[in-house]
Length: 153
Image (cartoon, rainbow, N blue to C red; front, side, top):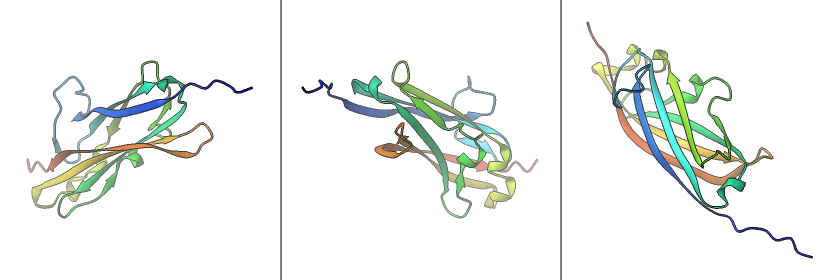
């Protein structure tokens, strides 16, 4: 006798990715950051579709900064506490959120050539099933362009 299994169709999307000065989450987002100062990244995404709540596992979030021109390449996962970028699924409503506090040491004044450093932020989202295997559900978000500057005062 067959077992009835519901059809699962999924869609996912990034809702918003924004940066703000550390401790100023209520302030408008910013893309201009003083090198050597702490700042934060917020990421919102969702999973929708038929029977989305039946999908269990873990989202893994990775944030990278790619310099535009001379400068460092930075992986922000190096600054996240162990397990801090692992988000369990399902959520109560299919929406997910991650707040990352980035220390001032991520982009130091010495990393900024000529007083200004443009960098593109890229968010990578991957899924791991309950057996600990990476699966085909993944996505990425490009942008915003961040400008790090050195205050000579």
